[in-house]
Length: 369
Image 1 (cartoon, rainbow, N blue to C red):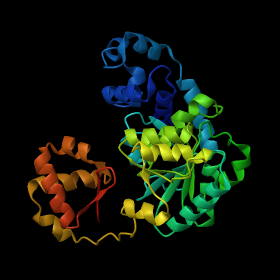
Image 2: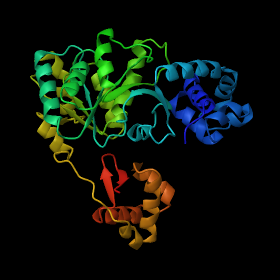
Image 3: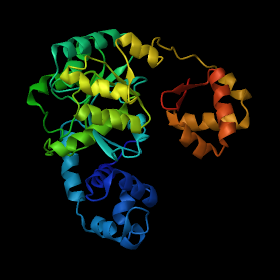
Image 4: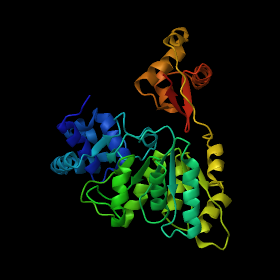
């Protein structure tokens, strides 16, 4: 069902609340029954919500964010930008599983955010010749693997990865640390336009937001959260790539890194990740595809409706849940089905054997139709 402008204004307004944060903003929405309810709820009720308290409740009540949200709505409609709220079915489901994911993201591009296979590629802005060759070789080796690549549209490895994806017709998405009124760095405006034909650009920031340094780590959590796995091409001992790798690990996502000589400045970060077991070592695209079990493209089976007639009651419960939201994490299945963990595991295994469901990376289940 298409949203009204007023619904969008309330949802954008939630993302503009200062002093609340991503986690508590989603608690507010859940407690109040929707974004609109947050702005109509009494202070006394808001302050009872865990993590909010009286100070934040008064702050929420005093903020006049809806006028700014109205202006933002006019901007995104003019620029053909979509505002995806965390309760929307087309919000990236992998990102939704991250506890600190943004309540709302702005997206301009094609429908690839819930692609079957998503890989984050990150690395230093000071890319070396070896890094360029490695990035190009990896992307070329991934061109037939049915993946989408997400990165940060920054100088260096990010830009090289996006350009290589465009060359090989691989969908690619850039996550930026500023509003979508501009592109930073400016030199990437051209490729950002190309990316929107097979991929796109994401931001959690409203228009007019400048690319200030403190916003880049926030951008990195979206890159890590959107992907099944993160690949670090080159990195120094410090930098955004290592932050992204740490965030991916905290989300229980796979992390891979390409090793280099100890004397190479921009291999030290990768070597550190491997040495401390924060990343698995890969040397080629085929290594990566093998590690992720992506070395073949699965063709969905045509399931006949009659298969669904012989299900046990607990299996039917699972199928009914996946009918509503196909990409569903195991903890959500347990919560909504009410099944004990042992019975849920057995039912999921049987449904997989029957070819009715598929287990995806991160213990997310998908109904095959």
